[in-house]
Image 1: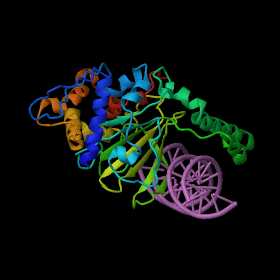
Image 2: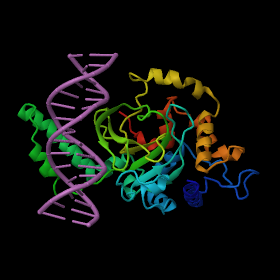
Image 3: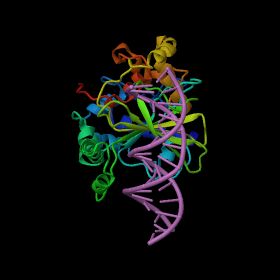
Image 4: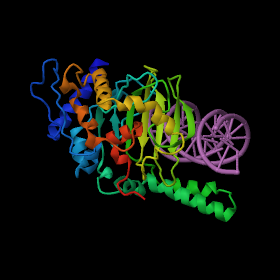
Length: 324
DNA sequence: CGCTTTTGACCAGCGC
DNA sequence: GCGCTGGTCAAAAGCG
């Protein structure tokens, strides 16, 4: 996997080239052969910048992937018959050293199309033009059909709508997480709506949907065939609401994590270790953690001390700017 | 009782 | 056209 790590690293380099605020030490510290320094993320963390950037195409270039497949990007071999990484997909790989819980790490590659333009509700707009609209229309129709037919859903109608429109997906973001639990708590509430066996893998893939009304975000959770301790979570879509961390079932989460979160630079350490595992950072030097220290600075702290916050740090774009 | 999970069926897309 | 696979639906079961 070391070779793959290098791959990831190279893409990081590429990213730094395009985004100077992610400064990169030319020489690096002793013991920091790869020369990473704390990136100067303007605000809101890594992807907030990405989200706010006016040029996602540029980002796409920055992360112009040589990975031809998700497996390659992850550094894990075939997980079923996944084909090419779609252009709008983003892959963020991470590994947690936590024993039984879920931590995400930000390290990896991204490729986002202009569909994900940073203008408000950008992804939603993109979605409304294609797959998102298709699904929304279906839902509306179904709801209308329920009213009209007394709960009887007209399958044919919805299917006809689907025909002729090539189904397109919203941008997807994948995380690799080392965890014993499959479904990682990220602060949002999810309802499982399906599970499928994955080809060439003894581990099934689970499908979840955000339970919040009108939020169409979905996620897939599967275990790596090669390393069962690694959970691959793929998010699709953009949350249209705040992270409901205070909802039922979150209190225990907060409690269970409070000790860890109380640690200074908790996330920095985690991320640092994760990056280290990925060969992206060197824990023996401060610069190795530099990338993460920024994330754990007070101004970067999010209001919700859980993994949802982590997710939002990594991908704040999941939380729409315009809140109800 | 309301919500979530399970699970078999169904459909669309793709490759051969 | 056919078979395979990923993704989704929806009824039933489970749970608090």
